[in-house]
Image 1 (cartoon, protein in one colour):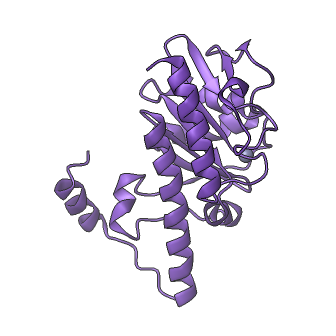
Image 2 (image 1 turned 30 degrees about the horizontal axis):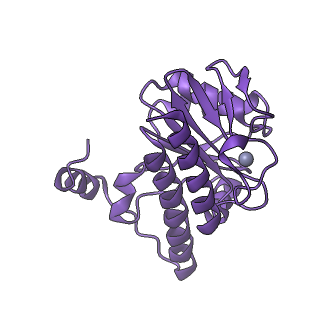
Image 3 (image 1 turned 90 degrees about the vertical axis):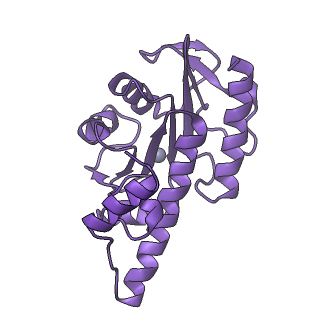
Length: 207
Ligand SMILES: [Zn+2]
C-alpha cells in the first residue's frame, strides 16, 4: 500500500475510534509499520481534527524522519514492532469499559464466542507510568502470546497484521469488557469452558 493511502487509512480509523467512543480529547494513538519506517499519530491532536499531513514518520528505533511531535507513547509502538515481526499495526485507546477492568486489574475472560477472535483471555499488564520506558517493558512478556492487552490504570493496546485487525480488536475488547461488567452486575458471569473454546476454534477455523 502507498504511504499516502496508509495516512488516509490512519485518519479514517482515528475518526472511527472517536465515533465508537474508544477515545476522547486528544487521547489514543495509532501506528502502522511500512517497509521504510513507521507512521504514527501526532501528539496532542484530536483524532477528529487530525489530517494525513499531521501523521509523523519514524524509523524503527523511534527517530523522527518526517513531521512534528509523535505520540507520547511512541516507545510502546516501536517496542511492539521490535518484539513481533507479524505485527504491522498498533492501536492504543482509553476505552472506558476496558479501562475500568484495567483499573480493577481484572482480566477479561471468554464470556461470548467472539472472544476467540481477540484473545481468549485479555490480561492486565503491570502498572507503568504513561509515555515512559516503563510502558513497553510492562507489556514485553505478554506480547509474546497476546494481541490485546489491558494496561493497568491506563487503557488498552491491540495489535494486528494490518490496521483493520488491530482496530477491530480494540472495538472487541471494549465490547467484551462491557458485556462482562453487565453480567457481573446481574450477579452471574459464566465463563466459556476450555472445551467450548476448543470447539469454537475448530468450528471457526481459528488456530
Ligand atoms: Zn494512553
